[in-house]
Image 1 (cartoon, rainbow, N blue to C red):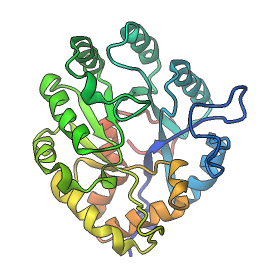
Image 2 (image 1 turned 180 degrees about the vertical axis):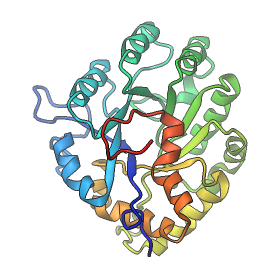
Image 3 (image 1 turned 60 degrees about the vertical axis):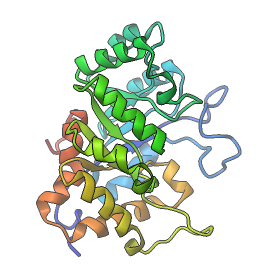
Image 4 (image 1 turned 120 degrees about the vertical axis):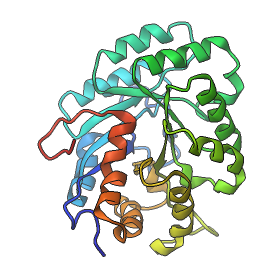
Length: 292
């Protein structure tokens, strides 16, 4: 099987989380009762896992609703060239959104925000607020992206509304393989028509009857559905590390999608493993081994 690493294709992981559970007061996420996750998740630990597998860069996605934690990641990234971008946390519609957006946007590693089924807020519940729409327009005007997390049929319907109101905004659908596409078929058909909407092939692993299948063949039908809808130009790789450890080790996460894309052309593999993420995020090349 012609896997990406064997064919010399570099990989950008578009979805990792960073946090330090050892800091005073702990962190908002993960919960302390999750012994598997509640330990520091910092770049050296990630590099040890990822670099031997052909990962050359990663985009960090916020794991905290605390605004200053987005700054913490940007400060951390200064000396960590494996980090080619970060998706921070800001709530559109909040009084200081523009001020904070301007502050973070001064750093070229800040590539957008995440908003969705997170921190007890649902994007669909606040979309009618004119201030939210105005802030999303400001995000688009800054050439930054919007990640929407934890897919549900309601969230997909909300993204249709978002892209109606702000058609210039690049949107990334996080973790879409988690959801059965048939449950949101109408909304997804609309989103397929909108070339500014991208899909993150993250959270591919699923638990069935208490077990996580390790045979890559099990995951092919769902990946076929996602690729069949959005095509080779709009789907990209993301691991969801270390949250992915709840389902399996990093090498399994990557092996499943490598198996799926291994039978496809080199051009398609390159799109999935790095080229599409460059279009979606316009991330920053920081080391010689990184593409772009």
